[in-house]
Image 1: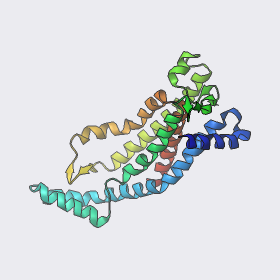
Image 2: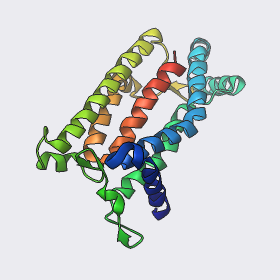
Image 3: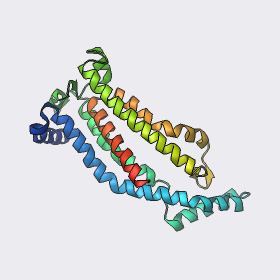
Image 4: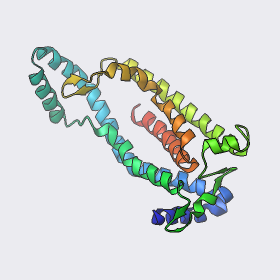
Length: 238
């Protein structure tokens, strides 16, 4: 982790002439953008997979009617259809999974007071009045919601809420346009998926909770990545 800390510090030093005291925060945003660029090919593949799965729904509906009394044949027929069309049901999960290591690196980097036996100098950096290693509860205890640090979190919450509202409307439109696209597992509807489908449009709002409980540096990563994802999905799934 000390190597990663050195990279963040060096990037912050490079950005310091442009961003001054917020250079480390700018470095985190730039690092997030770099990670998202690396993951972008997977996001494109996930979008193609989603479109392909949507196009397969009429064929799967026909198979369900044909093999309604024989679940085993239905399962084999659906798996064969996916293999024939070269559609993977797991492709949509890969972009998120590949980002987790970057998020946890930042989380641990700004949660430890020492790195390699020495003081963690990154904790001295701030985003305006809020320390990158601090939490929302710290901001509330030091000036309240509208204190210097509190206003930084208010700004992040506003961004997350706007992105979540955008994702909510887009998800509702997609579900309304394709109401028959029921997620499948081995040829059968996933148990309890009806309830999940109802909750799905609200999933983006859970990011507000994440921002509230993780260190500010990790929250900045989440906000940047979530905003990137909203724009990316709007373009890829148009």
